[in-house]
Amino acid sequence: MLAFALAVFLLLITPGPGVLSTAGVGAAFGFRAGLHYVAGLCLGTNAVALIVVSGLAAVILALDWARLALMTASTLYLGYLALRIAFAGRRIAFIHAEQRPGLVAGLLLQLINPKAYAVNLAWFSGFALLPGALLAETLLKFAIINLLWIPIHLGWLAAGNLVNQVELAPRTHFAINLAMALAMLIVVGLAWFSLP
Image (cartoon, rainbow, N blue to C red):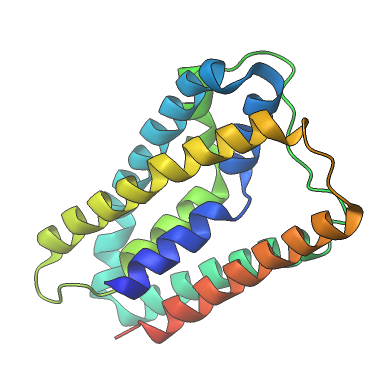
């Protein structure tokens, strides 16, 4: 269970469309204005998890080859994201919003966010917490994910709100990019080592 919680934490703190847009909304509109957007992202994240669990998870858990194929696809995508982050340059590229997005914008972003599908697939298919008790395992995973998801995204919203007030050296920006990429690669390793 600790490996699963660590994987959730590392994947949530690394940049993807959800966290980058959350930071961008915080930078552009402030913490309070971004709360509706984060609420939409949270609803969208749980909707994506339900989509994965209700359809793909049944196939993945029943067919070893399908589980392996989908884990491989997830790994390749997360590896690709890690490379993009590591070589993004010396600046952290937050997504800046032109208009104040709200609940619906956050919900819709997660429904089309490939990272959301990839990480939910990895979380729900790559970590066997309670073998033989699929419903209990799924509910436990939803609880762990949400207990970590909410404060992490509120933290990104606050960071976005503060990032423009702090002058960071280019080397610091580069070090942050490398740390985020390494965190994603660690998650990939944890997922593969937890396969039954």
